[in-house]
Length: 542
Image (cartoon, rainbow, N blue to C red; front, side):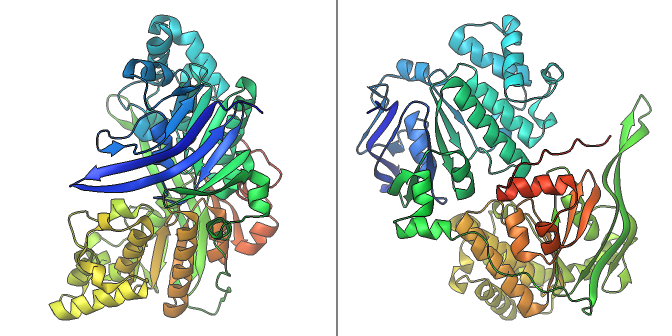
């Protein structure tokens, strides 16, 4: 039998705070052999990342400790070796890719400098001599024209490019083990597919082992040889990937496999009243140059789009990052300026000022992607939800306002008694329900949902989708649902538009587009989302 490269034995992780001790990981064991990909799967809070960070001792010690266990890498226990030996292992033998590259890369240093720094620290290659190796690494990870990217800073790259740079940094010293902690969660489906394919190619080329951490079972099926399913700090099931998918034994594994968004979107009904519409909508941002800062060109974020959305209907807006989806939604709600006609409940609002729009705000609401970022950490939930009532219904007494807040929380499936708590005291799914309650308390007619499920676990995604569908049926809401997750869009939207570079490349009934997409770009999105035969993403037209 092959000797494991990494052997985690009976590992526990405890955190100590305020005189209390909580056990985040409880006596887990798993092995990774050379050239093998092992996936550690589970929902947020299951202990996946804590387990992975323990391997390189990246936890906040001494607040964290290991009451039991050992982590053997090539026969050495990483929990007991000295700091100098551990530094040799980090970056040389074991490297790590994190979920959000923008927070992992230094915003003040160029791409070349950040990769060259790793070569200098571990191989003694000085920055002046490192450029050929840096270019080689950037070429390996699929960065086009890497010579032009050497002086670029992280904010000048797309999300996929930033993740490729992170992979180049991880591979710089040819590690034996790569730990990938949710490396594709924040990426578009096509970019996600490209990154997964890249990781597989690099693994095969270098004979590298991989620990892949994710909550997305669709990704696991594509990349992993074996799976460890984790919940509440314990590994509850482990085995070959095909076996886990075809014959799951544990109830939690079956729960994860059944957690994809399901159900039917509302039926299209052209007799319903039009809530919001746009004709030839354009949002162009000027590009200025020269001493006098003259406009020399425009970024055409939204370029001549028509749409109609009726009561009780959902229009799905899909496309990759930078396609103009969110800009379209912000323009429809008059949060940014635009050209072209916008009609809302029979009124032409394209020229409305801020003060003219204010009375209409209660009828059009927004739910954002990241509930933790959109909820004030300094306000209790009762104040967050009730704030809109203070603005739009000032005649309500404090008791009436509190009753409305409690009613809104109850409607989204939260205990009204929790309204005195603060956002950090809730899970991600609960925070998103609070964000939805904040919108619903004003009894809107139109809701823009901007990637409201992308930051959530699969089972929580399914719950939020069911909640949105229920609220829509109950109140006749019109949804503009913006997402790059086509599985969620399929469960919610009856009509759909596919955007790329500010333009609509395909539109129509959602099921017709999912069943028989006409455009190559749409086919590429479908292939990436539903694991179909790959269709190359067509080159963007200048």
